[in-house]
Length: 190
Image 1 (cartoon, rainbow, N blue to C red):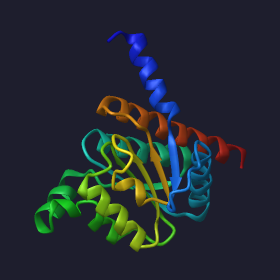
Image 2: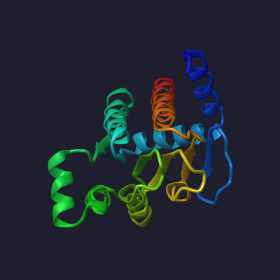
Image 3: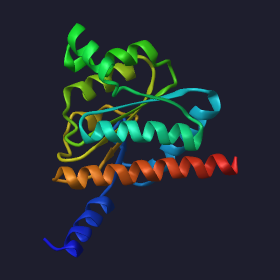
Image 4: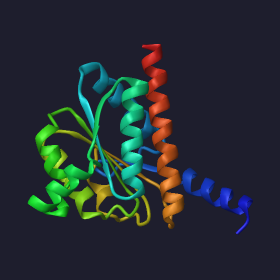
């Protein structure tokens, strides 16, 4: 595959972005504006954002937890610390490595940003359910299959129809960068 073809395919995937609400209603890219508004309100209220994902999604969770705190003043935490993950995985089970720490930290009105390329990672799906139980706002980013489990669990469910991890991960990173930049712009105007 040539570079130009790769760019064209990635652009096609990103243009096909879907953002659905909890009821399955399609918001399109306007859903990203809703996410920005909710994040600004979270920052103003002193709430926190919690991030989780596996593999490359864990790297994104860590990166954007830092970015949203440093650049937009949103208190944040990410559950990628090896001691935390191995402790919870050993004392409970691997499926609980995100849900259990959410139980310790998330308060009603806080936000959970959960990233899974497949949308079917059991530990990320369980984290979404736990965050909902605790009264948090749940934002999901997924790809691969339109019927993935995670896509039905968030207040906002961001989905790109990428069929490869490379396009899914690149799209998710671009969406997360857009979100941080948009929150920063709104906060600066505030």
